[in-house]
Image (cartoon, rainbow, N blue to C red; front, side):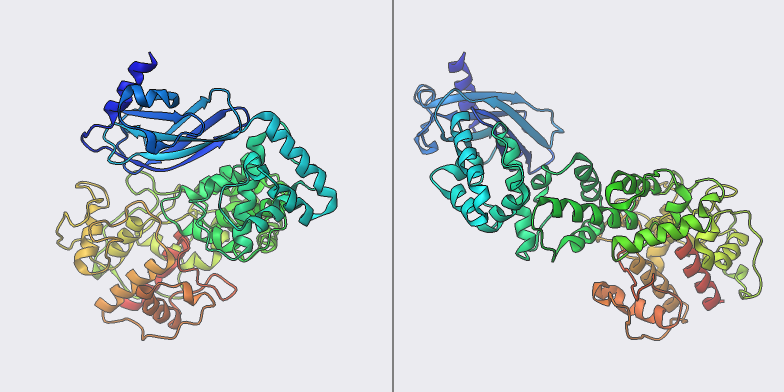
Length: 554
């Protein structure tokens, strides 16, 4: 049977229609030969068959000749797995034949591969691993320098799994020491020890001021509690990298003595990031209650309170907790229901609905003394927008999510804002050309509005042929669209110098628009001198800006 498999692996190396190559992989090797190889492919089309060949100890991949009998003689292990065409990742678990401590060379090959993936597996006997742990643990009472010396003695770095080159070894070993000084390394769990090393290494990168790509080093956080990695994945799996960049900014320039420090700071950063880029109000309650050890809050379903604090950038956890306390004690939680729930648009654009057509002739001067009584019970969360919401509601430009819930702090997508802007500015009945953006399908509820906005020069796509349907509109992009409209109407305010403390984060293409609108009072910051250009715009902010537009172009 092994001979037949070897012939099959050889056949995999023949030219074929290209599918994919291995883009990245990692190996997790326990003591006594248990190993797992996980990885991903560089395209969305996986090979039909993925093969793994592991050579005997001391053998090199250069010794493979392509002749089945000769190659089989230096092979310790062969395996093939079938993959579905839509697979983007793979995992192979194996138990290497018994042997001595050392590295084993291996190769991944697959149907259609244009290049192989050569890897190295570590075989460490349990007795050698335990001997290394014993020597290192014995050095702990003598201090960090003795610990580092013990780790580097003989083959201990290899046996412990500390030889993965991620950061400066001494800095990473110092973090390891401060983490295990009270308990020592586990003599029965090499994978746990490797996990400590990886997490300590990424902490060392931060300590050294490195520009850490958190997504690339995601596997280094596996040692941390499951709740931490769950919310970390929530941030990293967003379509936009705004949340990831915010998270990164909160843990950069920190010094982590041990992994407890990294865990605590990461929890704080996740609470702050997800509160700002929540992706649904329920996520705020989820992350705050999951990390009750640092927030002191166990309530997961204070929906109205979380609506009130959501979508805001807080500089530190203490500020967020003060805002929560104020929202709680001011009676926000007694407001009507918890509707709105957060999240993106409903089918058909339910988040912002045009209920009656609006033309330029319908736009009259907005009276500063007139407001429309509303039944919305949640506008106390954005009282500053009451006049704007009431006026736009009366004109049929926007409506609530229900008869009584407006959800002022829910986010707005790009297509939703374009629709409200087009209708409010009187372009709803303009002619338009379709087909510019590949993500705007014919017949979609927003097709007309996006195409009109593009034809009138109000918007560009986020790429030449992609509008960005479904993505939440950023505060700076909302300002740019409004500024373009005012330019077309010959009512654009004069350029003004940016005065926000985070002006450096405003993109070049948006700086003139933000400066001019802020200088004229048409847009405001979010407090603490911040504009938060990449932050998600809310329904209340959208209403206020469009209200200002109506007053300007009347």
